[in-house]
Image (cartoon, rainbow, N blue to C red; front, side, top):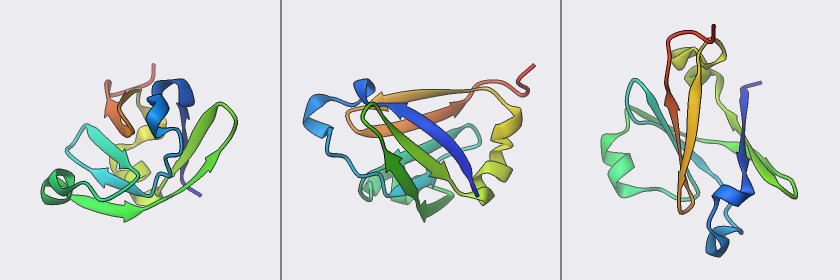
Length: 99
């Protein structure tokens, strides 16, 4: 099982509340992109792309990152930030260790 990332629905603009997240992108050594559709710019720039699973609750989207991405970023050992632009999610690794 992959690593679960929770995205608060309040971060998603109202017109995108029916978003269905389908793709995860390895954009660079610090940035993971999550999108509901193929994003042409991300497709060209990404080192890797995979389809993903997610759950939707009343207040959040819970995105499951694949094991290969979790292992590549060592995300369980590091701090990260979540930013949302419209319905695109950027997960940025901010520090080497969680300490």
